[in-house]
Image 1: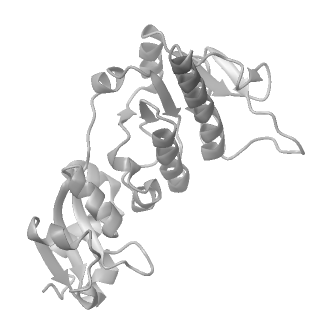
Image 2: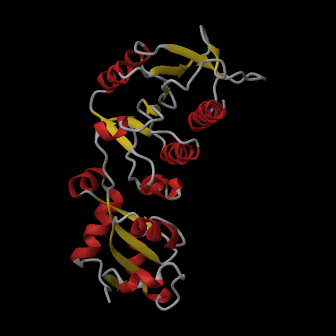
Image 3: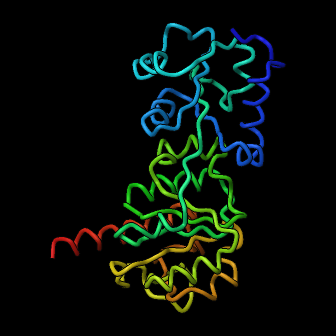
Length: 265
């Protein structure tokens, strides 16, 4: 049993929870709870399991079989609380390899419908957008290099497992990536209050990417310059904008609706 926070494994786990640069360097991150640990195993990403001492022998059914397949450690409650990112830990943490995708692999799919995130900063928004992208059947999520880390513990939790199923790509040069999308015949859309059409009017079935901007500043000028069509989401009252994840959900589910209808025609 590990009972000291000076243990090299514990030091590594704490760094993985707290430091984005270290996660990228190692290609590893942590997941908490039996559901995400089991998801990691299904997708071939799980490396090791850490169990809270007071929960030993009381693991959920989906975790018990994994203890016969993967190395695991028992960790004292006091130390486990230091490696957990939640106030009330579920008692199981997985050390996980990051799923990785190439730019080319994102473009291989038939649907050609993407979400593009321009300096999105809120972990909860990113987690929700990943879940939405899965639910709406998007081909992938493209992020600017300044966007929040996908493997931030808060993001990981809020994806509810979509982090293992939705292809993603961080771009060092988002403008260049947008230009490449256009070369592939993919139309770029961004929400705007002025000079735009209602979001359900364009035809998204021939290839589309919706750009979601920074929560405070919206889509940057250099990215907006690449946009083919501006769309708006009608709102009543005195609202000026919707939450980034909500806007993304509205537009991507319209994309999904059109895609389904086109298959029925």
